[in-house]
Length: 169
View 1 (cartoon, helix red, strand yellow):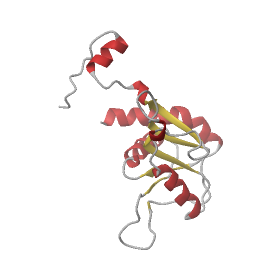
View 2: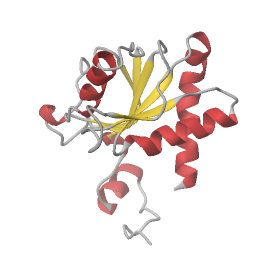
View 3: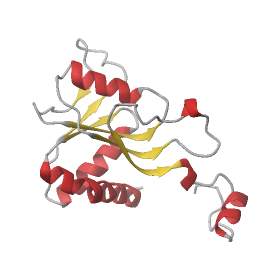
């Protein structure tokens, strides 16, 4: 959804623009779900005249070459801010951080970013992101508590029926 993408990019820069102005960074998106988030961030950076480098880290190396986990240009010495769609118990961002530090020998930014942090009612602690996951601070737009799973839950929470049917058209 282009409007959602635009808003994600703007919300990212609403938080990170002052941070970037103090210390520029590059963004690394975790494959396969992070590249659309990274593209949204980069599109708004262009609109805001912020020079931003974006590259992708893969879960598995490419089938060609040796130990080829990265796509795109990587800038030397510039800290890397990792982005993905969701922070959860899966080690994808943790693996990405290790590959960035060991294989590229680059420092990580003090933050990392996701659209959703998988914490909230109904999720076991094992399925949730933990504060010490990467020893950096997670910046996220939503937790699972921001979402309802049914029309009934929506009505209970907001006092009215939703304006959606649950069917994507």
